[in-house]
Image 1 (cartoon, rainbow, N blue to C red):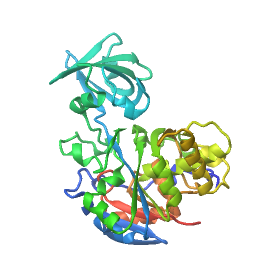
Image 2: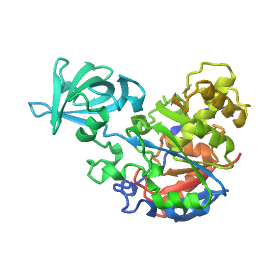
Image 3: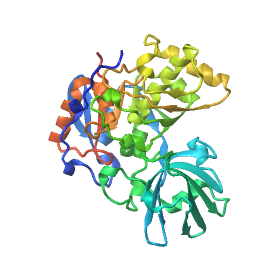
Length: 400
């Protein structure tokens, strides 16, 4: 199905009072509320009862990215604070997992707070127990910063773990506190590289994961390193005019096989949706003998052939990864899911409640149709907590 024309962002706004935004996590993450939407009906429960709402032998796909302490602060002799926020690695590797293992030096694209107080020729230094970190501005316009540190044997991951802060979403409007270091990570986080948490996963505990296993459900882990673009507001009046952010994804051969064998596919979070659907479109590209780079643009889902089945597309991805004689596939996706998008892979979605007028609201509206507004009105009426540290929903895809 082609994207719908003239999608007005004002039609995807709703009134979210500030006091409904969860400022802090619950003491027990699986005690959050759970709204279940299925066949046009809405039910209420607690997240630790999730297992009772899933079809038998479901396959759940989790995003195991790990949030990095991406917010670095340097204090000048004048007392001015320069804040450097890590966005994307450039050298020694653009691949996030490899960039985190860099030793001695690394270059990143960043956003820089108080940039006007940082002269081009000035090197910023930050001393910490056991190491010294320096930063040099390489390109002011593009926000390119070169970091170096001593002793050089330490990895960049080690350096920022002791010098940086976990970057909380801007709408929380508060400083990072010690408990956020753990609360703003999923219990299964593994691969460092995200600057924001895949928040649907924050509700899962070891106990809930064990319940899923005992009930006969299958769990799979893939990776999408959430970028700061997830908080980028849609400034255009028409949804089609928005430029979608790009994020790095890593899938495994086991992911593809599990997807081919899945009886009912559940995406844990919108990031898992973006990854799973991107896998399908990559297979479509391979069938069309297009470039072999795993790179999905925001228009691909609307301009590529629409008739190819999921098994056909995924089999081509499997053949591709086998031909490469590897177990993992690294790519980039800027997939833009909005009303009019035809879902190929995902049957149900576990997700939090998102900001008004955001690309995530567009994704939810594409998944459940016009009922998205009923779902959000019901959540507001029943005192659900919203956004990253808020409550959760289980949405079954509306079949049109």
